[in-house]
Image 1 (cartoon, rainbow, N blue to C red):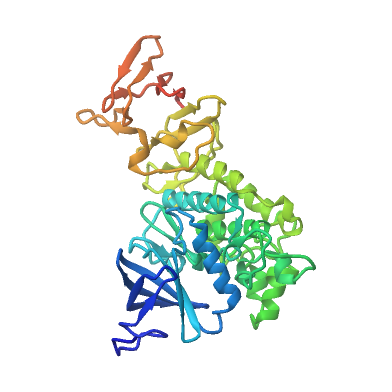
Image 2 (cartoon, rainbow, N blue to C red):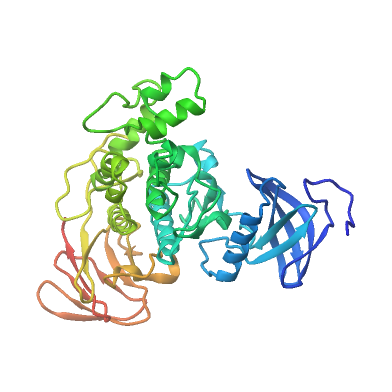
Length: 451
């Protein structure tokens, strides 16, 4: 029954619908529209939620079966706006309920238009969280099949992410009508190679394209060749992304390198990116284009992104955040913003509980040790305040004097360079000195190095 008359799209305000479980919902407002359908704000007995309602052409029996399977899978992960309830058909269509997206999460088009204020650390965290989100999906045997800029939202302040449009994710090996977004699709899918099907291997290519765009604000194949195309139609796109894809920074072929005048920003951003990440991009967009098995796995992205995030340093001259190379003796780097030489602060090497793995954290003004630094294989990386173990703090009465403050609930034991021991209770600070060792009381320990 329609109780409102204001047209908002396929559904009028006040339209009442019923879920498969018998719950009645009421349409409140249209939130947006996409290629498959429209999204509405709706009222339910548990509070307001979002409803995706398919266009009749997309409301196929196969799509309905996929939605019902995803709902019954009962996947709970706060990084996904997962289908929660199947909404029964009406007038040749149907839909599903999901949580509303909080306002702090922004779409990537705003990032690409440079209308968002964010920074290097937030973008690296967004990349890290995105990798782990899709890894969690893949570990459950589910392929997303349409990883692209349109399906990810992020908080520009914290880097937290939300993956939406999860109604195309299916169990690996199942058939779906969705093959992906052309500019993100694996080349074998664009070409339509015999036997090529969307799955976790093609997801890895799409994921790499998304990571490149997050960090570079540019597509990895859109260089001189794209600029030379007079009509960027479907045939031209199939050539650029499927039949003859060429990485902007392919070390063996520079014919698609960024144009120095038209595409100078991506050239500068690439130069400012840590070599550890550039090496992975080169591999996935050269060897990985020809051999899907050679694509970079989520675990490799995760380890590299965490290491580079821990090595971000503020420029002493202008304050801008710079990526440096993880480890003990990285090569000198000039600030991408002002050109001054980046001065490296002391380094904290955290050694995890067995098996022993080392993490190198540059102790700049924003340095923090998080709970994910302590185990060798953390279930999930989280840079929020709730997982804080230690942070660098400045002495309130002696500017320029720094220490590490215990933000964990357990006491530490500090060993000075002369061998004397010092207990560090929660909330207390130990002065920062080269040679200082810290026992975090969980099997993990750390040592401060001058560089």
